[in-house]
Length: 240
Length: 240
DNA sequence: AATATAATTTAAGTGTCACTCATTTTTTAT
DNA sequence: ATAAAAAATGAGTGACACTTAAATTATATT
Image (cartoon, rainbow over all chains, first blue to last red; front, side):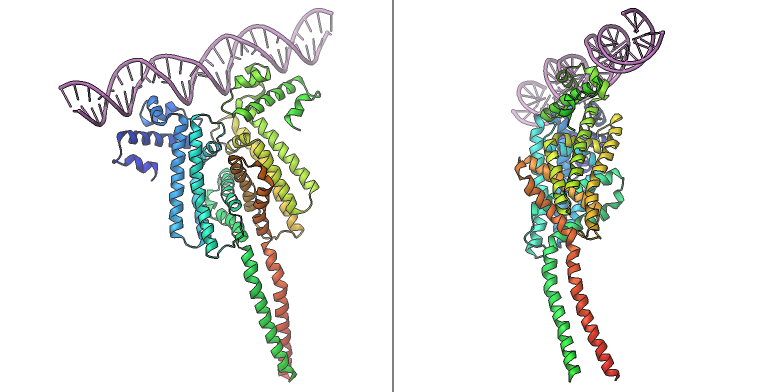
């Protein structure tokens, strides 16, 4: 469930509602102006609370970012499990997962870049170490959907068995992030589908390439054999 | 040339030497404690100058980061052109480029994460917009080495012609960054070569897969030719 | 060598920042 | 209605990146 929806809900304590209001204000400001450009005072003012309240709820400015990133990962994971439920073939599954990833990323790219930093535990002290490990766990459990889809693809015989899953995972998510970064730089958000397709294609090919050979070879041999048989029959027909 | 070397040089003005001393102090502190954890005061103290001098030379704290990132990119580019000069076959070229990239990245990962942020123009105002575009240019001119190697591979017939270079580029650099991030998290720096190899393999396979068809094609052509020959003979037989 | 001019360095500011804490206000339990 | 607990407040704090006017050093000219 998105942040927007949470604010309108009534079945939560006033404290939770306050927290969500603050978080929503922070999200808007971060998205518009960037993390460092927005002061805690400004966030508190926009949410209509005092600065102290903000710190009571989130401990530190980084706490806001952590909560937002958890919310984004939650969305990513929800969408992903929906995709795995609805799409059954492996290739469209991977394409849908990629499209979901790239869309959420390009929408919240400022937050996502911040995520990478938190994720790396770089430039961060004390408090955020916890956040770092939480995010790491979230990232792992999200990246797991790729592994799941690929493994099921192998079981079904859609993908050859001797692939290196972790390498393909790195290429998949890394390629998506790198690609969406350049998409962001060129303001080419309309190319999402095309880019995703051309990104998946090489990976899909490499997952199948063994099968292309394996499947093509007997068929080619068979076809050649049949043609040659026909040729022989025809030749013997002529010689009579 | 590395920063370390620059400090010992004598064929540069006192001003340049000062700047390099400050930059070197900043690099060490950033690497040890992270960008945000280090104050300009601390950098100035380590370099043995006043805080004002630092700002005279680099304009802002971000200016230090910009200069450092330019130096890293410079190293990446130097190594890359060296690789292109020494290695002639395409696959080892790509592997060497990847290894160089991953090694420099894992050494300076804190700086590199900061680079990504600068590169994105996220969280950054005024001054760093310039830095952003400079870095963008550097990134483009560096990423060009991949395109060069691949294009030359196509010319030589090592790689099929109908590949999508930009998609492969995204997968290459994205996969490397994502992979080195997880390598960093698991402190598995000794696996560099293995990881690079398994990352390149799927890409290389997908660049070549068209050649599987190329191998099949002559056999099909031959078979068809034989059948057509027979057909011709039969036609001439019938007409008699 | 003396002087004028330019470039560089300095250190004492300045406003803003994330964050704290004693106090007040609101909510919950009795 | 009252006591106890929880939450909200806003003035206050040190640290921060960055500025600026004055002092120092380097360079050019006579």
